[in-house]
Image (cartoon, rainbow, N blue to C red):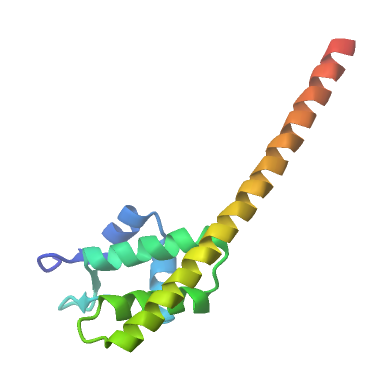
Length: 135
């Protein structure tokens, strides 16, 4: 039985839509480590861990590397930490701005790809309609 406020990995998988294997892998590479372990050694996660996994999941379709993902998570952790000094906080905020710009650019590239794919699908439908009309 999980401790109060903690979830076992199966529940985390359900909440995030990630596989158990993926969640374990993110732990192995240091992106999201379980907040605790049960007496039996099971990984236990908090809602904060689930939020972190969901953030990683959102970065994946934008082709961010594991290193970039780690860098963003470290910047967010630093900004959320109470002991982060002003100069470091400003540098982390600038890093966050750079990530936001990268996300915006990648979203625009995806919109462009989607537009081209939709145009292609339209051409195929038109070709099919012409072929059906001539038979």
